[in-house]
Image 1 (cartoon, rainbow, N blue to C red):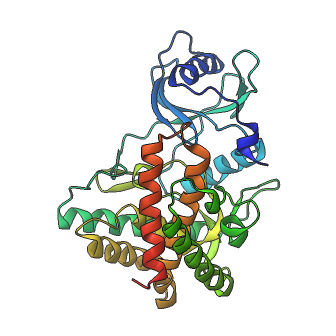
Image 2 (cartoon, rainbow, N blue to C red):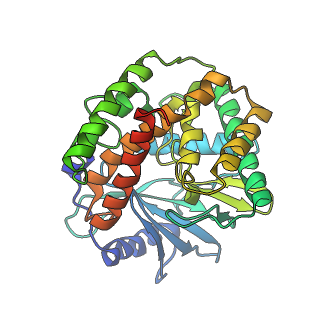
Image 3 (cartoon, one colour):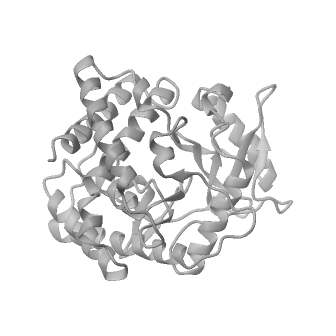
Length: 339
């Protein structure tokens, strides 16, 4: 299903906030004032429940996931939480539902759910230098590597329930006819020279990915979007949020995504080494896995080039789209030239 052909959801923050106010009635909240935190894939609000507890209300992007896929996301989060990994808990409506449709006027209904609030602070923000000391960065990214490995260990030992369905970050998920985040070829922010370079890198990546090992050892359920904003730190503990893109994929993709935003940090070598060391404390990571990080960083870049072309002037500005595309093209170029 092509989400962009379906998308007719409200385009302004005011509209989605009105939708959130209406949705809160399902949780027994009337006259609440939702605080919009993020409006990209989903509109995410900080809200107060009827008993005063904070929570995160999510209004899902129209057509991106089926109800079955969203329930599967919540099931995997619940399983991870049962193994000791800190993730949010679903908050059912007063009728006991985990997912409800809500609409304004004649607009198609949007899927809405509510999750418990986690008090940790995000590792960082997109485009903002981390500002960590070497020791703090080593501590945070070692702990993150351990947490990612524990997630992969847990997934490897889990039998998903009947009806479990999530998309795949496999070859087709990146380079098939309908990639998960859109086709990189249609990105509007590449000049002719850069587009030619990206196409050459695509050929190299296609060949490498088609030959890359895929088995229970290195492929399974992954988070797939471990950006800084989705990793919270609460004291020494790591908390993981926003499983909206979770699915079946190569484990090393989670590591590549966790490193992607940090490539320009002066202490990047320390960050990468700490993440790998932490992962290896909990799960095997071979030299071939580490050697594949540039490939999987390039896959993330290709995914971003597809992502921006379908979100510009909706979820993001053209300026942001240009910046994301420029970074992605640089990652792809580094992969092409073996840097």
